Length: 169
Length: 169
View (cartoon, helix red, strand yellow):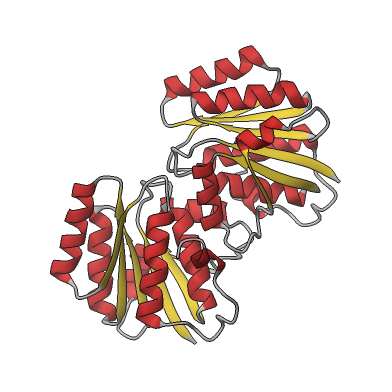
């Protein structure tokens, strides 16, 4: 089974935790075993959001994960990038894993958004999906859907139409 | 089956959507049929967080819900109160439903927290659980657990220990 890792930094935006649950569910549907590596504050929000662990089954601390990380551990890297620290995490994981990678860059402020996007672009060759997002998760959710479909195609378990894409396409 | 309604205003805090999913799951486990009445922006975050509808099965627009609301429609009212508009919604639903009610008051700023708490106290006799909360959902989650257990007691489906309470008690 292919393995994906999702990186979550400290949650500034109300959209981050919802989008992390969504991405984890989508990747699971595409046949990935998903791990979410997060800071302690991001983990608390995941735990409260998903008390029965329907969407995120594997959680790990982002620093401990980094300590033991080696190339080949994961087939796909997805990073939520909404702070400077999150850029650093993404770039570090990217260069260790050396695999298919997607940075989800988001912020309420356009200037910050451009900064983060440029930082990721200068330091990696990762695919970037970016959108202004704070309260409204839809712009980033739509870009995530489109980019994932291009990056890894429809997985083996996508027999039924994806209701979440119908609403926006 | 007893019916509960959860009110969600516009999401300022990263904790609101996670706590709404948590509360809905907890009430369902206590034997309630749960409806979440929310503003459109709060609904988008719920939809993205819970794409398979494991936690929230019934969603409605808060304004439309209010239009047709009558005493007896719900047995329990829970309102997330983190803005002036949310105070108004809670007070309005409270007086129409005239049933067991809990206001979850939260804000990152202590002064605002006191304001909202006083407004709810002046206009209703609802139970209040309040906590400073922004990134960290735990203080409000703990108060929600304790208050719900006092307000409605353990439901018929609570056979196993509640793992979410063990962590904090």
